[in-house]
Length: 574
Image 1 (spheres, rainbow, N blue to C red):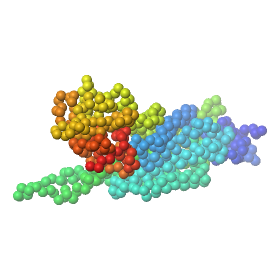
Image 2: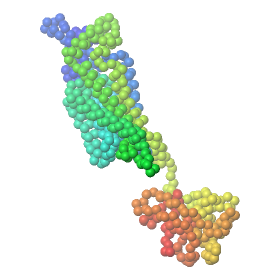
Image 3: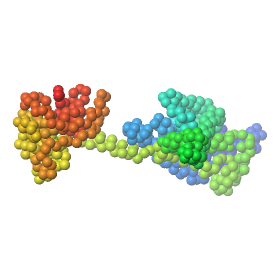
Image 4: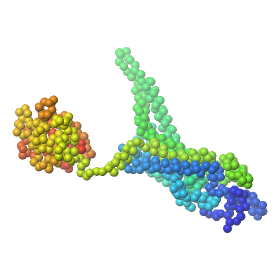
């Protein structure tokens, strides 16, 4: 049973609570004099959480609002990472620098969501907040905030360095830069998260997430973090200054590049203009680099601004809340006001004006939390592209659409051979050929073929060899366009505007299908009359004309073109 409370309300006697467990150093306690000569002074503490005493009653709802915004940021950055992992690069334009920045945003925003998911208490007991040893939620949220902050700063520096090398030094980062950036970006983040967690620790100090404690935090975390962030800002400023210099030089080149005329009327260019042509070229190259990387540069600037602002705020917060004689002296007017307010039936709101000197302002603190929550949304807006939605649509369409096996490259006629006389529905009208008559429009019977084409060999070519189809009807149904006739001797008998002479097909431009390792596109050829073959000869010619129009894979199989499965490759010895 606890001893009576000799402390004035709303304070509680510190000795009534255990000396271990939770963040004992994080208690807000103050000395109070007593009338007992044996115990002239006692330590009295405020109830946990401490920030409720320094800020208005709406602070709790503002914390919940920041956590809701953080949920939206987690969803945005998580979907962006999932798109990078699942969709092809032509939809996402992913790059390892962008992926790492989005991952850093995800870590920081997810740390603000953990307390909302766990719904755990912030206090170990009535006056003591939890630390990373007494609460797993506190440990994870504090580690993720520290790790995400360091990852954002390091990868922001790497991105700034990459742009600086490309613009100022004309150096394109390669594989060595890739592996070095991975080692520097994630390795440095792990080191400077493990170091402060082991030497300083995290606890509930402000808001629903845990943050680094004040002792040794400047040397182990905030000092190096602000140093790397400041280096990124300086490097970015140098790059911007170089861009401005090149832009001004390009303007001077345009003004100085005048032409002068010699006495003989010849035109000559100013020598200074020839020497200063390089800045104009450099400025065009800078514009191309900035056009490609302005999204990443914007994200880096926003994230560095957030982290620097967070660092400055917490360094000031540590300075104000550290237990020093100066801070205790500054807190006496507020403590006296609080005691008087509770004795007269008042509350803490009567003393909020005096509490402003002891902590950071409420508006500044909430701006810090909301800026951290918005990082994931900024990443989606700047690094996300509309093509990502197209990629997801095509992915779901490919996954959930119904497919019929084996009909991917089968023409419409091959699938429906009965009663159809057109090839891929490019049919004739009133028995006459359509504009693409050279592509087919054949019956799969010999009678149908003769009714639509007068296949022969005019102008002295022997007509004894007219046309014949394959002997087997199933084979004809499988390959209705395969005929034994000379493609150069085709002409129409049903179109009056076409003279009865050999109709020569225009050159066909080959389109390469899916990639084949040893594929080489054939040259376009023109069909021409050939010597009539022996009916027993097995050298068959497609209606497309010469066998050069077909494309075959190295294994002898046909390559699908325009959605049609072609017959086996043609072998010709002439």
